[in-house]
Length: 358
Image (cartoon, rainbow, N blue to C red; front, top):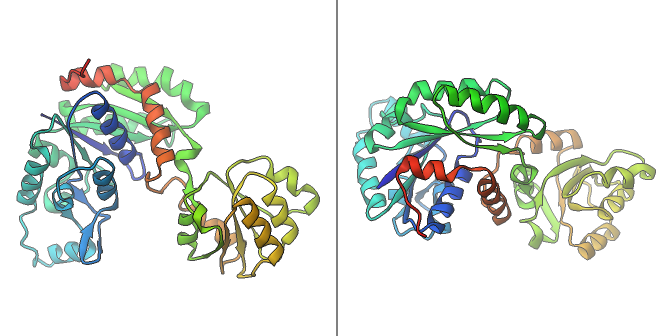
């Protein structure tokens, strides 16, 4: 049995996406898989039960038999952290992790472990990523999100932290204009230092997108029509603050967008509805005219009404782009395609001593 620990050096690097993509590939090649998130700092109570949304989603996606309490055994919620700091918490977190892992790993060829926001998360309970790896005898695959050409620092730092148990890295979300640089300069350099780069993945607008329903939630706003389209994905934001004469030309520049404009700008709203628009976001708590709602219903575009002004609305939404969970089938499918195109599965299988079914 192999334990593969998917870690990262920063938040929103693509760990969950890689866990899902690898699990699908492993299953497709005939391996039995297990999944575990050893330490969660994002879990919350839902109907009296502690739930980590990513762990629950993967459990449901792969129809895993193990209970969620075994799949995500350690939940460091604020009240737990406080009780640890005051000395009131007496839970044996290491023992709890061992117990959960025994259930998850039984009868599996590969267990995929998902790390926290960064490699040292969990140190409070002696369960940082290196400690978990030692405890469960796991190999680390580190996801590094490209933020600058100094991405090599993150890879070298991870290698220094994990040592020989680290099998390599995936460099994720590389802007298209820097792909050649990373492929031809960064990857060979890291491999000279003994760090295998299993994949260099480009930045993809679809994977950074946010659903219409998530937009409404983050704004605390109301969907006035077409709620059935709330799972549609928004890839771009455009602000409708121009004259109506230039609006159509402007809106045609971007597909799959949300258009943000004042609730009193019916001319701009109509222009947006004539292009590839996923939703209209009307600001200032100004209710649209029946004409606008009627046209939106015809073309199936949700209209969202928010109390915030336009500038505040843009600022709120921009905080969420690229930071939403990979829980939509379109995103999962696209990421799987990227892995199939660019990930060196032969090298991974060789490192893990796995032989796929013929």
